Length: 167
Length: 167
Image 1 (cartoon, rainbow over the protein chains, first blue to last red):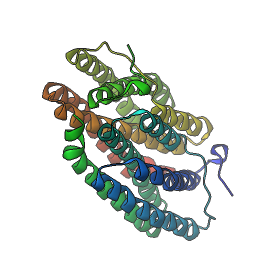
Image 2 (image 1 turned 180 degrees about the horizontal axis):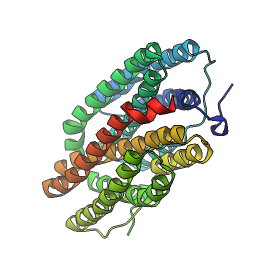
Image 3 (image 1 turned 90 degrees about the horizontal axis):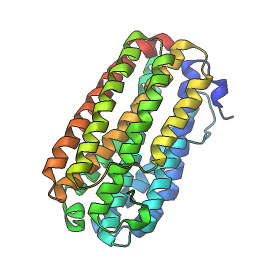
Image 4 (image 1 turned 135 degrees about the vertical axis):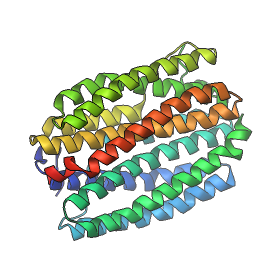
């Protein structure tokens, strides 16, 4: 069963609601990434998105594991932030004709996604620990570590050829 | 004049569009923060939001400086991601009755805002450098440094009493 914001009374409720938010976000990302892979022209960027699609599928499984460990069925609630990030990514990617400028835009959108995930996992880990659920925190930490590594790879690409060529 | 996504052809266009996006975001944050200050009960959190409101006003002035350095009038374009983050923050803050749980929710929303700003400033700095605008990059770096410092302060608060008391 989903947890509506009006039902949130305790930190445990907030934890479950935010778990449902990031579960929705990760699922939306598995739908958005194939389109980004199609549009990307830089081979390293395309490969990076492909790797991250595989990681995202594993991250969804880890989230399902956390739901179960915490006595809940996996459930998504709409996440307005991730919808906004994907909406903006589509707007930009749909309108930029130059392939290298498009790559720069796709990369920036992917980093916005990563940072949303990084902040949510950071919050969830802090709350899991406060709730005495170090076991849940440890699983969530694996997702956080992957997101941070992906963001670093994207930053490194951003600093190198993609943006250089677009200028 | 605003730059619509359909007008984006070069990295310079993308830079200006993203500058307009974060200019909108910072202005929305100056409207959202006073409500968050009102709702927060933890004195450190309240003080942190107050300090950040002052910083945000300075950051807006720095953005206006960058627009002018780069030959553009300051202009905002709607940022769907920041709208989504603020929408979710209002949903949560409007519904949580327990003051300490509310503080934890406010803190998480503030960190989502910080991470959006961190990713956008990181992107803008990379693009400014590629465009040979190290002068603009240096001004934007001041905003990025402040956002990162604010996020660290919030993380430190999140790890300490606020979440502990809410559990």
